[in-house]
Length: 111
Length: 116
Image 1: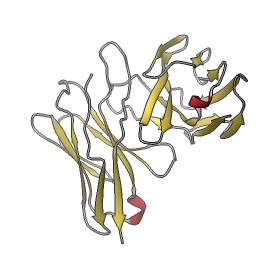
Image 2: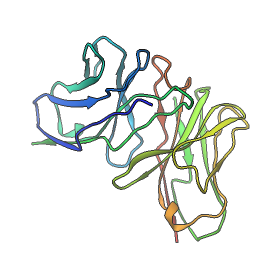
Image 3: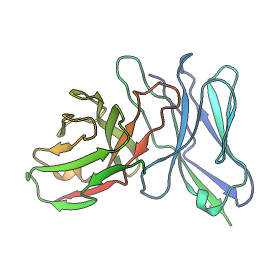
Image 4: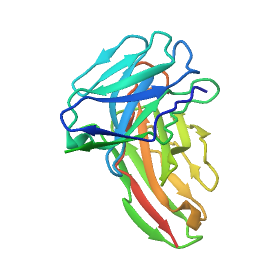
């Protein structure tokens, strides 16, 4: 099973870019990386996903290293509403089919 | 509107009194799952279902049961609740099983369960 490692917490100034790293060194060649976030105790919300290439959508950018062992989620202009717990997920597909969320990174955007 | 609906949202119950938390999705998704969230432990998967009549254990299945008789519904059953099952529960669904491209997971709003 691919597992992910994220820093437990980070701070970011409002208006600046927030760069959230994730290590997934055991990822296999066809496994995607997904990012979700959870604001307070609401249900987690999808942000972005990718396989090999960098991806961008209206919420964020995802940079995946060439060896695919790590990735970085970038919120280009963080706002106070981006304060949340961010989860990097690699679904398991060998034997069982699970999304392992872990404890994520608690991002605090500071005014 | 695409939705995953859980009920009840809040419940206080007593030890040993059977309860069911319902989950329904309106997106014709094949994959559904239940998670519990406890302080400091993140989201942990309880059970999942790949399709109708196909269910399997997640990481913390003890004390829970599930069934998937219809595609849209995936109830979580606590046959004899205990205080250590006090938690925030989330139901989730996705079109396909994990690993397929673009397989966004949709979450319900959560159910706060307290067992006294």
